[in-house]
Amino acid sequence: MNKKLDSQLLIFAKSMRTNATDAENLIWQLLRAKRFMNLKFRRQHVISPYIVDFYCHEIGLVIELDGSQHGVDGPVEYDAERTKFLEALGLMVVRYWNHDVLSQTEMVLEHFWQICSELKSTSP
Image 1 (tube, one colour):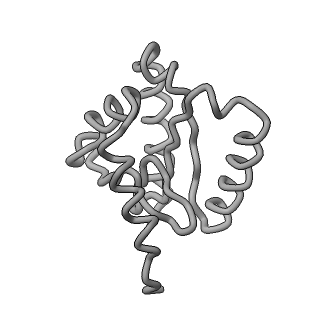
Image 2 (cartoon, helix red, strand yellow):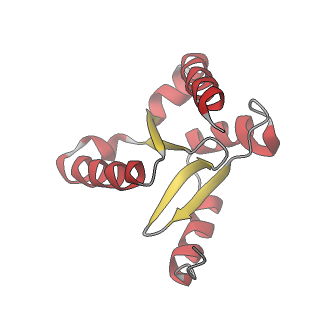
């Protein structure tokens, strides 16, 4: 599966990396360079036609950080459709609110640790 990725999508993903939210920056500092459970994560990674916030190929995990705009009708439906698409590819999608990442970081990391541990134990 060596499809050429849409260059506009790649350009947009790169711009998203440089304009990250505070929550994305915090999580990236914890995940980057295999700092978390020795897993390699990518940020603003293209899984066409979408861009996911964080992705770990090794365990098939997508992490999405959502701001308050994701709590209204349009984005909720879009997020559900997107999650369904990614899960159909065999990926697990977990979502955290930006507010929780910033105010309850330890709780988010504990939950995240549990998910990664379970996925690591079942991945080939």
